[in-house]
Length: 281
Image (spheres, rainbow, N blue to C red):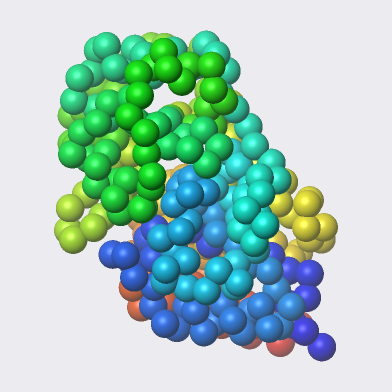
């Protein structure tokens, strides 16, 4: 009998599965075991589909099922290279990017449209982000891409002051047609701040719910692990959830299990916890 038959495990990438550009070998071994026992392992990330290529330089792509990208705004079939589900920003909310370009000259602006990445304003911070995620990008003006479908806008800040100015501007502009999430990436002890604009009501939880429907996963078989505030809704939605020990303390209260650190294999710890839980049942 396969212990994880008809089960789905969604794992955040940066800070949960990947630490400083590396995946702990324990994680990969545990994911193989989870799959061998009938489970479907997927990624749930703010990254775009094109940025998953960097992950697959660290682990075998065959271990990963259709995954949640753009913080829940898209589900991408990794094997078939096919979009299964996607939400788009409205024409009105695209204008927020124009306002940021005109009023906040130090904030970088990336637009994610399907598999394409467009840069409206290039900064050192956007260059790091695109190089880190190994993204092909095209430098454009707002007018050149305003009629394309936009799935996410990523505003890249160099410091907290820029992020606060950006948040204040977005609050003044928001007409209820869009959602926002702030994420961060620590690499080589440098903190990178990302402010993401998504379609209305989109979260990793909405993506996970849709993916569970697509894969016909029954209640009780949805598992998730994440480390940051954009993971909270997903952690709350999952039937069993986890977070690494190095996540913020106020996120740990929502998880059923707290594993070790990301760099030491928090995903493996969670899979071992799930295995022991299922064996006891």
